[in-house]
Image (tube, rainbow, N blue to C red; front, side, top):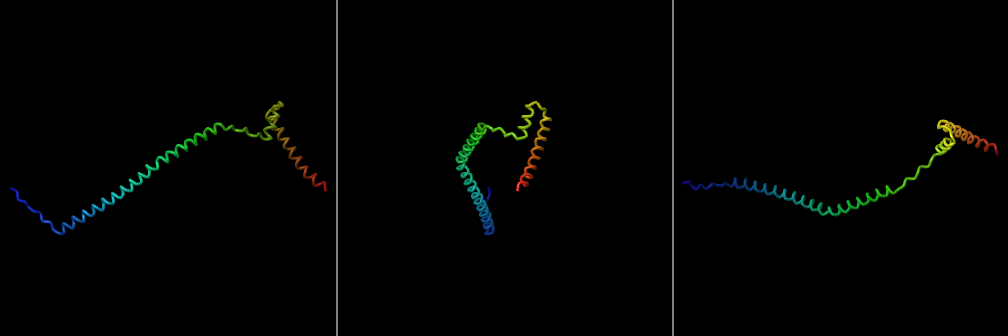
Length: 126
């Protein structure tokens, strides 16, 4: 039969084992602190979810309303320029586009000459 052999434990081995256990305990505590922080941040996120869902629903409503408003909005026709109106009238009267453009150039030149003549007339009336 086997002998019951008692293992002798020295003070040095005990201190070494205590140090190892203390290190393990401190690591476990740090791990628990990290887990606690994660749980708190997760619970904050979960608590904020209903508020975020409400905001998201409101934003969806606003987007839908603005889309409806854009569909309803009627674009105003652009105001035609003086040249466009002049050329349009010339074409309606039977001229070709090239003739209408030439008539516009002549009209503009005459208008410019008239403007230049007006200041000269004003300066002659002292």
